[in-house]
Amino acid sequence: MSLRVAVVAEAGQMHSLTQAVLGAGVGAALLGRRLGPRRAAVLGAVLGTLPDLDVFFPFDDPVDSFVLHRGATHSLLVQTLAAPLFGEALLRLFKALRAARGRVYLAVYLCFATHALLDAMTVYGTRIFWPLWPQPLGLGSVFIIDPLYTLPLLLAFLWALSLRAWTPRFGGVLALCVLLSSAYLGWGAVVQRLAEGRAVDILAARGVTPARLLAIPTPFNSLFWRVIAMDG
Image (cartoon, rainbow, N blue to C red; front, top):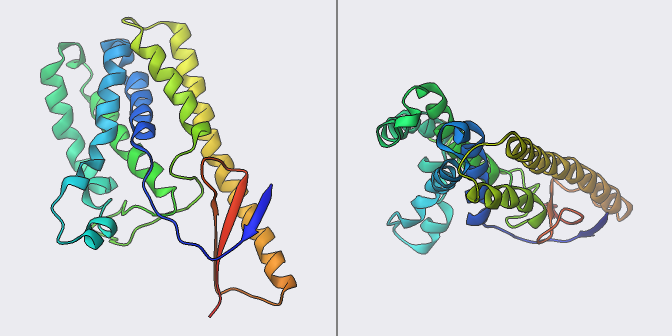
C-alpha cells in the first residue's frame, strides 16, 4: 500500500453506471424469479438511478446545486415513504408481482437505499437521514468511479439481459457478484483505517499532530491513498 500525505479537496458522486448495475443486481435478486432476470434487472437499474433525479431540481445557483445535491431523494427516511408508492405502481404494471407485495416493496426500497448508502461511502457524503439530520455523512472509503467494485455487478447485469427465465446457475453467479462487490467495500473501509494510521505516524515523525484527518483513495483504485490533515 502506498500513501501520500497532502492537503487536497475532492468531491463527486458515485458514477451513474455503478448505481444502475447495483440497482440491477438488487432487482434481479429479489424479483428475477417472478419477472425473469432481464426485466427485473432493467427495472432495478431504473429504480437504482432515480434518486439522482434531484440533479434536475432548480436550485438558486451553482453552489447550491453542488452542495444541496443528495438531499431528500437520498434520504433513507424519505425512501421508506416512497417505496410503497412505487411498489404499488409496479404491482399494477406487472401481474406476475401481484402475489408478492412485500417483496416488491422491499425491492424498491433496497434499490433506493443501496444507492444512497453507496453514495455515503464517497468523500462527498449524503444526507441519508434528512430532514432529521440535515448534514451529509460520508465515509470516503471508495472513489466515485472504481472499476473493481463495478465490474462484477456489470457482468451480472449483462448476463441478466441475455436471459428470459431464471436459472439456478445465474442465481449463484449473481449472489457471488453481489458478495464480491460488497466485500470490496468492506476492504476499502479497512484499508482506509490503515492509511490513516500510517499517516498519523508519518506526521508524528515530523512533529505534527493534526486536529482532523481523513484518508481517501486516489482515482479508480483502493491501493493508493491520499490523506487530508488539518492542523490549526
